[in-house]
Amino acid sequence: MKLAEALIARADYQKRIQQLKKRISVNVKTQEGEEPAENPNALLTELSEIMSELTDLIKRINKTNCAIQFDENRTLADALTERDQIWEKRLILARVAEEASVRNDRYSRTEIKMISTVDVATIQKQVDQLSKAFREMDTTIQGLNWTTDLQ
Image 1 (tube, one colour):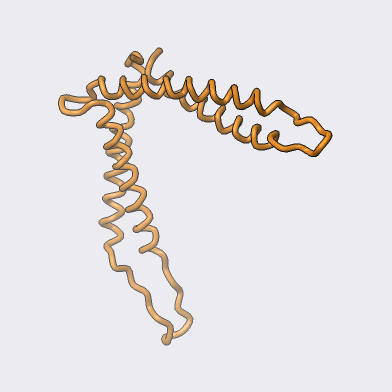
Image 2 (cartoon, rainbow, N blue to C red):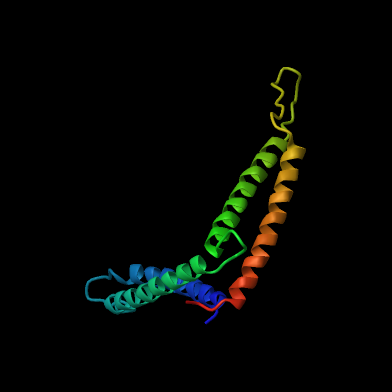
C-alpha cells in the first residue's frame, strides 16, 4: 500500500467514525415500548473495531513519515510540520490584510476616521509568497505520498 492510499483510508475511517457517532447518538434512547432503528451496541462494537484499525493505520503512517527523507536535512514528518505552519501563518496574515483593508464609511466629519496600522501591500505580498511556498512543498509531499510504500 502506498502512503497516499493509507492517507485516503485514514480519511475514510475518520468519516465512518463520525457517521457512527451520529448513528449511535440517535439510537441510544428510544421511547418506552419502541425499538431503536439500529442496535446501538452493535454500532459501538463497529466503532471500536474501526477506531482500532484507524489507530494502527495512523501509527504506520507516522512511522513512514518519520522514516522517509524529504530532502537532505528533513524527514517527511518535518516537511509536513513546516507545511502546516506555513499555511497557518498564511491564514493569519491574510486575515490581517483583510481586516486592515476594510473601509469604514464616514457620514460626517465628526465621526472617527479609522486608518490602517499595517502596510497591507507588504502583508499581501507575504501571503502570496507563503501561498507559493505551501504549493511547492505540498506538491513535493504529494509526489512522495504516491511513490512511498507504507511501512
